[in-house]
Image (tube, rainbow, N blue to C red; front, side, top):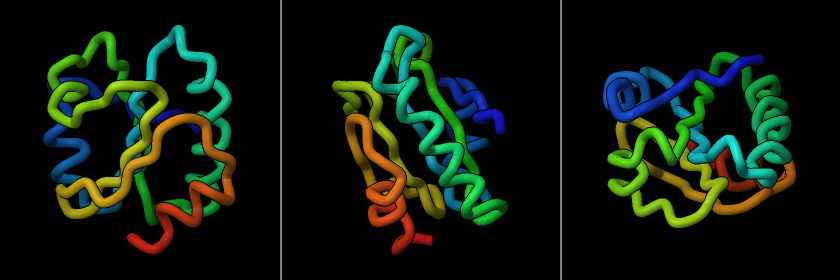
Length: 106
């Protein structure tokens, strides 16, 4: 299951204007906790199917969006619903914790 690739240019259209809740990982290619987290996010997407969209943004390539949301460490995962950021977690989190944080907003 591939993540949608999000960047400065498509962030507003893909994430803020999404018709479904959007889970966005702020990460980087050099980030080992990001690599550990991504399979957990993919399991989350498998669990919720078409109820959510899943994307990732490279903080080194998309500094505008990264600064807009004051992302200071990676991975940071945010849930956007109706164009608003509703939930935010930082660092590696196991699947049950991700579900606990995000499910109330779906």
